[in-house]
Structures are given as structure tokens and as C-alpha cells.
Image (cartoon, rainbow, N blue to C red; front, side, top):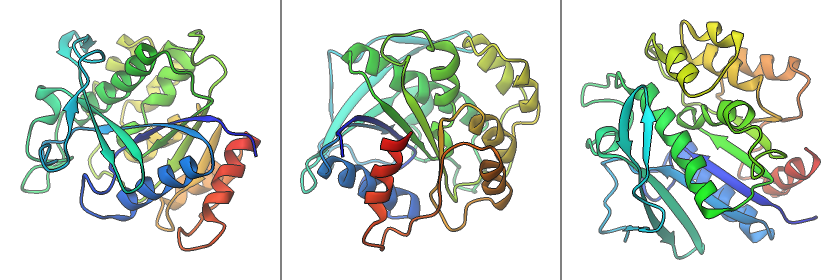
Length: 268
């Protein structure tokens, strides 16, 4: 099989966050694709719960310092990097003190989802894309794992559609078991419009529920992966009916799981 450049946007990765189906899959998938000869770039948010000293994170000065305008707010983008030495994997972290310094991931100590999670998702996606542009690295596949990464397909197919780095990219979206319970901010669609996402279907995000968000995102994807046996059944059915290339659920315990992922990328 031919090697390719794969960009991963991951909501969570072991060992930087506790083990879960999502963090474990992201960690294993990235390693497996690298071992199969692909060139990998991997990004996740730098949540305040991540122990930077223990995980030996350090700032990448040449990539840090640019400012992103999100909903008329001027926000500094800081890029840090760390390595999972046992797997020879390098992970880039997207950071901004306003969004990610809090000692939490997606919810507060009472389990309430943060009201600015929509802006955090926008910042993460924009931060990754701007960093990849600064690296001048051209991905052939962009794989978004976790809803925090779900905004990226909109950027790639709309805002950055004419950028030479992304013009021919294939976008893959995973359906996981990471469902949020409360809709994102009522102004989410307006913030996306300010980001250059010009699409009459933005009205479908007037109520930005998990289901509405992923229906919208699937429409922009070039392929969909059922990444969990507990993925939302309505979205799984929507993906199957979309006619887009679909990789059915692959148990990470199966011997051919990651060969099937690799083949799926190749066939897009």
C-alpha cells in the first residue's frame, strides 16, 4: 500500500488524558498508521488537566505567537509538543489560556458542559489548520476524532478550500461515543459564518445539538468511520444513507482492524 500524509485532530489521546475508548483508540490508531509507513501529524487541545512537566511538553517557538480572531476576540495561539517515546509518536498541542488553562476538559466539577465549548472547538480547528500551514505540510487525509475536532471539515471544505495545501485533501470523520447533552451556544452558527463558512445550511445549526452538528459535518466529509460500537444510532444510519465511503466499526482487538483503516484511507 502507498504511504500518505495523515493529519489527526484528536479530542483526547492517552497518556495525556485518562484511558477511555476514545483516548485509547486515538493513541493506538496513530501509532498503527505510522508503523504502516504513513507520515503522521497529530494534534489535540492542551487541556489544563494535562501535567506538562511529567509529560515533558515544551513550546514550539517558531509555531507559536500568532493571533486568531474568534467571534471578534483576539486570541493568542500557543503550540507545544511532546513525544510518546515508546511509540515514537510526536503530539502537537493547541493552547490558549482563555480556553484551555482551566483544570478541566469539557465539563466543570459538577459535570456541566462549558458554555464556550463551541468557541474552544473553533479555536482548536483553526489552530490546527494555521499550524499546518505554517509547517507547510500537505496532508492527503485529515481524520477528525471526537466532536471537539468536528469543525475542521467545514474549514477545509469552505474557508480553506482553495489553499494549495488542502485543495485535494480527503476528510474523514469518526462517529464516537462522545455525545454532549446540551446544545452548543445559540450563536454557534453565527460564529462559523464569521469564520468564512458561507453555507445556507448553517441554519441547520440554529439548535447545535450533537446530532445536528454531526449531520452537518457528515455532509462535508469524504468518508465516515464508525469508531465505536456505542456511536449514536441515528447518525450511523445517516452516514450509511449518505452514500459516502463508510468504514463499519472495527474492534481494536481484531488483528486486521488497523489494516482496514489503512485500506479505507487508500480507497478514498
